[in-house]
Image (spheres, rainbow, N blue to C red):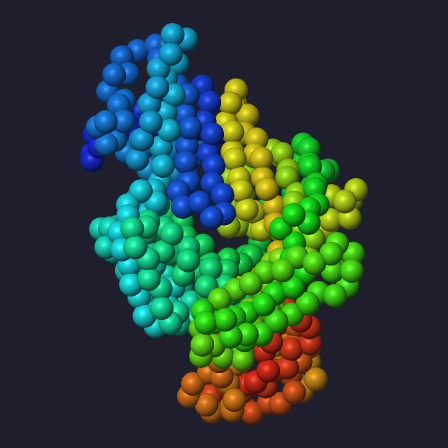
Length: 401
């Protein structure tokens, strides 16, 4: 049985309501800033202190580990002697505050840190996003919308996804990738039910890239798909000085994002608190011919009657695996020309000693080692072997495995 602990209060004055809990729902989803908890407690004692007007903090612990920290924003009572509470983590302040913004030649990382600090929140950590956004101007919009716009533009330019989350009172920006170890979801062990669906509603068969003045910069047509479902076109506006490498990356992202039939998998399973949106799980469902890593786009964890169950929405996006920094022996592997490796994603260079990268970041994917220059700044020359990456140049030693 999972042990839950609920504390509500301000500053150092916290009250424990754990023994009154009847049900807790803990949830989050891709594209939504805050995670939330919905709590039902028995209204059998004086609970008048629990009032959303007071700006109370909520802390939820599972088996002694903090899994949620946020602001109580809704409280409700009924004649059934039940008290319903809803709290949001610190990311809600990104959603519920508006302002005007203007950035030029800034990265998504810079924009993220600037927005968080302007609201007086603490940055827990942020990864480098690389791509510089020429201009991002928004008036009367939320801080979250600005951050999401910056991350969306970065994804289209680099093929790399990032996500924002709150933990223990701090806000983080993290690259979406799988860890070496992850939970396994299997019909043999923990899957209770599943629901699979396909749709072409959001599918597009062709893409046209144009400037604000209507000048065409690039295009692509998925001919084989268009013959089956007909023409569906997407148009994107790009900068006048967009680089060829960025055009190529945008086309690659389009193919992966919209140039295919979308698939959705929803699972109900025995609860595992590590299964949250942004994380990854290994899924095994033989009836659907699924045995692969999948990102979690949406999660809802329910604690009731001593049981913990979860409902997950899983993504069919390609998964990038986070590698360990080195082998157990502490020595790097000896690579040779002709080896097929997995490029982790990042910059490539025009020469082994170049100071600046050649274009924007490349997405992860398989590549072949074609040249080696020992002791050089960028000692390995890689050429991509599939369409998932466009790496074609000299790279650093720790950028592939």
